[in-house]
Length: 196
Image 1 (spheres, rainbow, N blue to C red):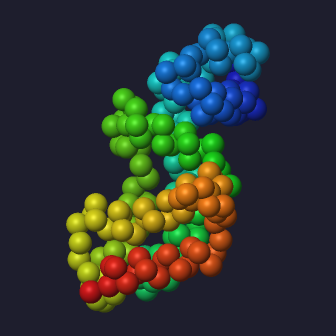
Image 2 (image 1 turned 135 degrees about the horizontal axis):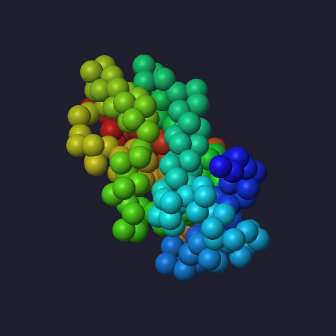
Image 3 (image 1 turned 180 degrees about the vertical axis):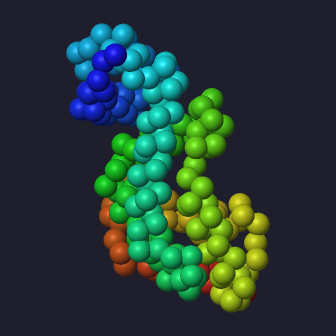
């Protein structure tokens, strides 16, 4: 049995991510990937059962990295405003610094692999965020709302700011650059909307 070559595995995964981001999931194949990383398709199949296995393992790794970064300095016991500020800061830094990873995650969310990928979401993250919201509601720092309403109000404005930043412009082609000042101004409005 051949030893695992971690450098080769990393090269395969990184090239797969770049290819998927550039050309989409439908254009991605093991044969094209093998040619890009200068290995035989059989070499890739040593590490991954098939194309789907490779994509799902990559999704899991990218998702875990994002969740870990999102939870840095965050504690479910934090007061609501402070905890959401930490989340926004961590999420914005990760999204802006890891643009390809975010595009990849978004492509998976809009693919037939979405259900399988969703099952791989880090349980620690879900538990931490659930506890954070329950604590905020019990301290009357936040009104009780459906989970979907919470996520739509709490995070969609941040992701819209990040999209404007990635495009370099907002509505009407007005130049836009993400900043902490704009982020905090938006967060203040979000917090007002979620307060009881």
